[in-house]
Image 1 (cartoon, one colour):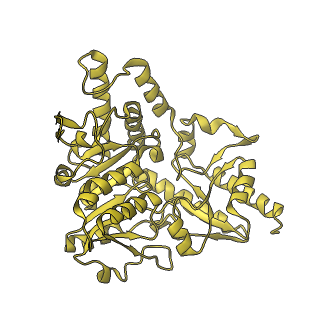
Image 2 (cartoon, helix red, strand yellow):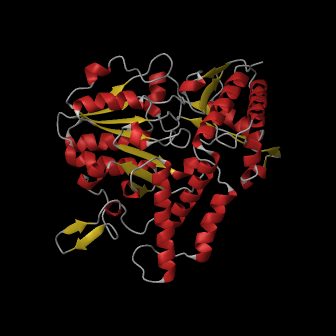
Image 3 (cartoon, helix red, strand yellow):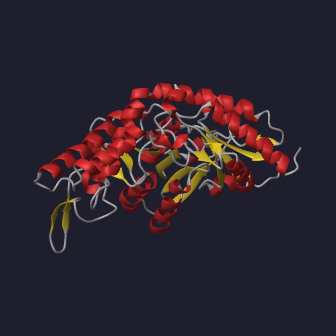
Length: 407
């Protein structure tokens, strides 16, 4: 599958520092197939216009393309209706929309927001801000020895004080898959709502919101072959109808008077201003591309390439994986340390070998402190990743060992 798909990604043909590009930074952002690039360009070439308000042909065509993309997102995640899908600027924007639209208006002193220590900053900082405004308390689940969320103490934490549970579907650092089903079941017993940060999980795992059981699922287009600057917030219709908008302006209103306004129906009441129309078109094209592959096949490939990577990395002396080694419980983001070499130095040497990886705290400083790891290097994979990419990574790591005197 992969070698055939690579031909769709123009950027993978380039050389970096005179070497074949091995792009292993898909956890940060994925590369774009020509089908997505062409869809965005064709929109600008043929029907660029603002949506919803115009009466001319270009406006009608742009509106059809924009709302058509929303319908594709809804179908991709198994939503009952496209009205339950809100376009946001990304996962971060979606989480802030929920935090301010729901949390700020519902929480009060004594309430609890339950998170895990493996969360991305985007699923921590908005709740810190809301907690400061409302008097609610943040509580955290820790990890077990296999880098998975430890549920052994859940019954002691999950009581009627917990109003919101927000959990990553898959860690962007350790690759561990979050215990969404268990947390949904526990939250239901106390009447709490559940939010799934699907930035890493939705692009990699088959996702059906109808069976998942959560109240909100959020994710970003750019991590699943689509453009930057757009993401999706799926929410249960009844909650979206009750929720206040977190941003005001044009488009999201039914009526505006001097001292009060009425909101437009969902999803438009959450989409103030001119939306990211071209990005939505590209998002729809990315979904078309993934559905043609099939998400079951996406997951199968990820398991296969991650296993190959773990096996090859095990051959590198002084290298330690920070995350589960069982591919059945993890995704394709593999963080590691190489002896006492700083991850930024590792990444710099790998770049000289044409290998692109991420280095640092990966917007998860609480997790890094919890693990007592200041930073890691991270190789992350997607549908275009090949064994040759992994081999190039391992060759580069041996080169780094030589340069830093680990041999």
